[in-house]
Amino acid sequence: MKIIYKIEEALEIIIDQKILIIFQKESEWGPRALGNRSTLFDPRNKNAIDIVNKAKGREWWRPLAGTVLEEHAHEWFYLGSLKNSPYMSFAVDAKQKAIDITPSIVHVDNTCRIQTLNKDFNKNYYELIYNFYLKTGVPLLLNTSFNLAGFPIPENLNRALEICNVKDWDIYLPDENYR
Image (cartoon, rainbow, N blue to C red; front, side):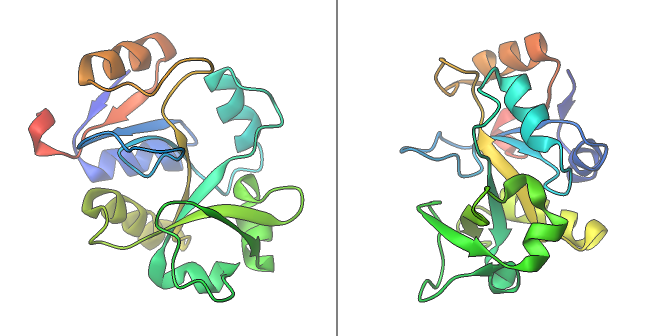
């Protein structure tokens, strides 16, 4: 386990096809991980669903979601009348580009439950995805909750570090309050 404070190091972990935990601010409330307590992975990896579900102790068939920069969402997904989906509340049809380039977040019916993200909603998470986009041309990341099967999302940094140490996951702490 490595504690990471710099965005460049966090990007290297993801690009190297390793799980990265992001832990910042207060925990999200509700059924979805929105970038404060999230397990992140490179969505281009066609084996990501197996890698992430196995690492989390989840069933092999459990789908994964994606967070896409709001200004690029329409290039990758058919949003219909949706302007955005900041709370990952909707499954939308994936465009061929998403199916071909980011297969790990596209479900078997070619839909994806996406979170659209703008800088005002979550600046640190936005900057991580934006920099991933600059390096790869892909404006989205695989995002699922930071927890293990049967256990809640960790509410404090000590519990988060404990899980990361046991699982040998690197953790990104972009929030200056955790330094």
